[in-house]
Amino acid sequence: MDPTCPLPVPTTVSAGKALPHTALASHNFAVPANHIGVVLALQSPGTSTVGWSALLDTNGVFVTGSAKMYDLPTLTFAAQGGGCTASRAMRLTCAVVNTTNAINRGGAVTYINSAQRLPPIGNNLDLGYLIDAIRDSPYRKVTSGDQLLGTPGHPNKLTSYVTDMPLYNQFETHEGNETAITFLRRVATNVTNNGQLLGPLPRCMSIIAWVFDPPPVENTYRVTIRASCYTRWPIESVPGYHMKPIPTVDAATYNRVVDHVEEHAANLTTATEGGLVALAGPKIAQGASYVGRAALSVIRDLGAGGYALGGTGSLSGAEAAASALELM
Image (cartoon, rainbow, N blue to C red; front, side):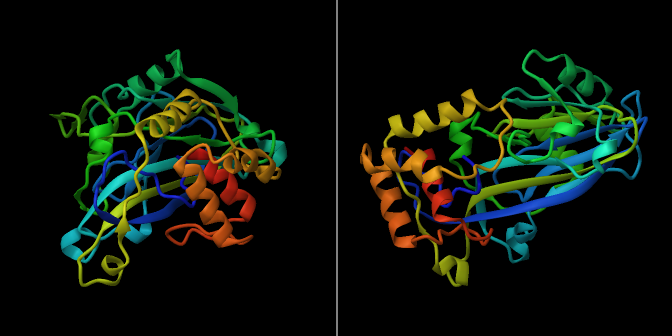
């Protein structure tokens, strides 16, 4: 379920043709002293918006002008504006790296990967109740700013998982970028905007949330949300010409992978390095399933170079092997 995996996520029933697409949205996010930072990440069908971040004062009140949207840049156009005609969610990760000078890194960081919606957001983006609920949740975990380095021994990434399988497998008309309020209605049980109570909007994957307590001095983070999705394009377009059948796999294999991701969803991870062939090779070589044999064939055909769908950059042969293990 990691977007860096070169193999598209299969379905358990035939679902026609589509074009897998992977992209990322990334921003620098500075959390000054006497401020709270919040990052929310979520993938939904029919939209290129995958995240939102903002600063709050110590009472949880939104700091005007601090909000940032995380939109996949290659899918920003809606269907009627020349974009893909429809899209559906596939997978998402959210990584946070502290880029502050080592001597100044600090501050508690609370994170959660939640199947449940977050509490209501008050008028004028009052997130005080939401922040307190995350901090008090029995499912949350806490680390510190000096640990989010993205290096071995310092994991920094959370992986979203499926929470609504029928919606997850459903294509929606692609609407491009969402407004902040629309995105937050997918995250919270309700949102009050200009005194009007707005109900929740559908979502199909878990919500990743980070809360950064006030650091001793300003800390700067690099927030990267990477997502893969299936897209459908007009038949006369170049992407439409390259659509392929969505792969299928038996339900037992599919559920085993999804269950594994959900079981470890609260654990921070890093990009896997070294020893991957030793890890994945024996299981792939066993040919325990059709997916395993297909993955081995793909890796063999690719050679040492590997590949990544959607133009996210090349993967080493070792990384491709480890990616194949996800689907076994």
